[in-house]
Image (cartoon, rainbow, N blue to C red; front, side):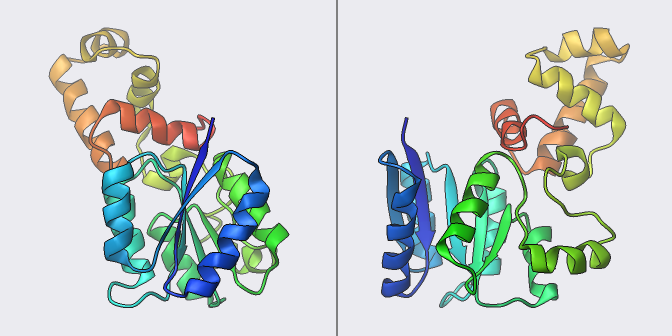
Amino acid sequence: MSLRMLVIDDHAMVREGLLQILRKLGPNVVQHEAHDAESALLLLETEREFDLVLLDIMLPGTNGLSLLGILRKRFPAVPVVVLSALEDVDVVNRALRLGAAGYVTKSGNSDTLLDAIGRVLQGEVYIPAHLHDKLSVTLGGGIGRGRSVASRYGLTEGQVRVLELMREGKSNQEIADLLVLTEGTVKVHVSKILRKLGVSSRAEAIALIQRHRGKL
């Protein structure tokens, strides 16, 4: 099974170096590259099967953080790892709030990047160790590895119960019967869940949960 990766960086030499590093992940890695937001979005629209996006936030035109927000809304099931020379806590916080699955600084080495990618592909949120304590204080401990879907997307207890049953393949009527609700109430819950997760279907919601190792 292939692993499809998209590298977004406006410097050709940087992209070439990153693509060489990604080859260490194995022979089944399929690599694509883009130099700006427009070309990246075109690839994502046409390919639609990426497993991970590696994004530099210093892009011409639409900057990386703005693109990150667009990616999380339009392609919520695809994790995005931000790669940047910036180690400013405010920038890292903003990236994580926008939905980044990881933040890797360019001061690190190739092993650090590969470790981050591996963790993100397993459903974790990666933050460099030297930034983790600062971010925990800044965010009140809200960001960390293995963060649940409920905490990351602000789901209520009721919405989590509905989502658990959605994951089991239950219909709206079956969920209503199990939770002693009306079908109309369940539909409202489902609509709110999809909106909070930034997805448009149950299948996309379940795919997103799988990215978090099924942790609700």
